[in-house]
Amino acid sequence: MASSLVLCLVSLLMATISTTTSTPQELNRDANSDPTDRPSGSPGRSETPEMSGGPWRSIQAELVHKDHPLRAAPGSLSLKERAERDFLSSRRRSELLRSRHERWLAAGDGVLPTYVSNLTSSVNEAEYVMTISLGTPAQNFVAIADTGSDLTWLQCQPCAHCFPQADPLYDPSRSSSHANLTCIDSACQRFTSQYPGSSYSNCPLQSSSRSNASCNFSYYYGDGSNTTGDLVVDTIHLTSTDGAVADVPNFAFGCSQSSFSDSGLSTTNADGLVGLGQGDISFPSQLGASFGNIFSYCLVPPSATLTSRLLFGSAALSNATGIQYTPMLSNLTTFYFVGLQAISVAGQPLDIPSSVFANNGTDGGTFFDSGTTITQLEPQALDALVTALAAAIPFPQIPSTISGSDHCWNASGLTNADIGARVPTVSFNFTGANYDLSYDNTFLTFDDASFCLNIGRGVLGSGSIIGNYQQRNVYVVYDRANSQIGFVPRNCSDAVSV
Image (cartoon, rainbow, N blue to C red; front, side):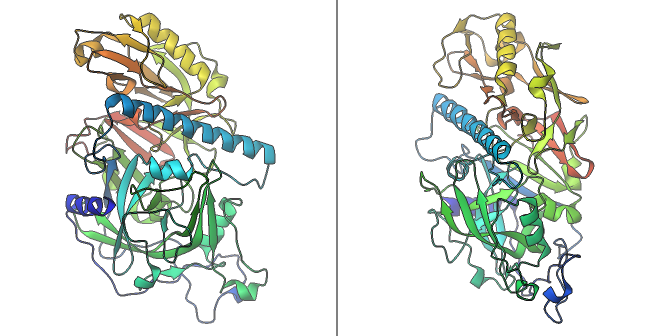
């Protein structure tokens, strides 16, 4: 199925991947590295990838949700089954984040960091995927798009222990533009210094030998699962917003030759992952010099037959009229943290202590995450929200039939629009900006006109996560250059909006 998805998305983008026969330039060595580390006559590689093929200012990709007709398996889940699946996966993501925090705090500096999702759920429960094309000639893949990860990785030949995938593995031997990174390459040094416990290295101590030693990585997830291999570079082929192809050489990514999980891995959903986080090795970080260090998306509801568009560069601001911005906060390397000051119902802030939203550097805080479906709130914040909604919603509460959601109401005889007009608006009050949730971003409505709160109870101390359900039909801008996140309501199914 992944192979057919690649073909469908390539058709959607209306672009044919071009190939090149030139080999990549050498990556710059770290400025502080021993000059004897450099091979004689080596010109060094550029510090960041530089695009070729034209002065492209913006690139685009199509995001496909797991429930989209292009990806949904035969006999798709019912609305109730999807809701239960989403509550479970979102809760699991929150639990794994908490596990990471506990290990971090217990071990102190040098701890092996773990990441917000585990490898099994990342691959098997991928929310949004995109196609990527790497190599000369090009090899096409379907990869998870995740703002909660930094490293882009694919399963590669030869592979000792890989999970099954529908597409062929990335084959370095087929690409004339592929090169292994060595211990003295700056991308390797940045990765190992930024994630000191998330990568191991066989780099020798002797400087004279380091230039020939491959840069290994081992990327760990919250449940102990991991993917391991070599950091490499190759040309990545991107689609500009005018439909042309932009080739970017020297794109660094993980060439995974072993993936491990106690629960096992088996999927046709994806071939790897595209890291959209804040770390130096992430997709937007590597392309920032070429495309302005800014990206945006506008997520259509999964029921729509359209795909969502991911934009990098100046086009990311093409539909930003009326946008509000809130500053990004410095916290953990990967995630896009923001300052949540309060939660309001019908414009009235709830009585929630500010400490509930506090960000102390390794615990708590609030961040946007494309890989979490349903927003997860700290328990005290969710309890206050439920109490306020129960008092304000003019319909009788009913027992929930959905595992994960305990707060439902009966509005039989009314349309979705009628219900939405009678329930109060929930707002997230961020620093300098109010994020007003629409009715459809707050509740899930069933055919019998019952509706349930579609915001989940996070794990105590894990912070709050703004999930993609609450981001649908919202134009979200990650303005990394100015350290701010912007948002404005949009009809993302409208071609003008995306």
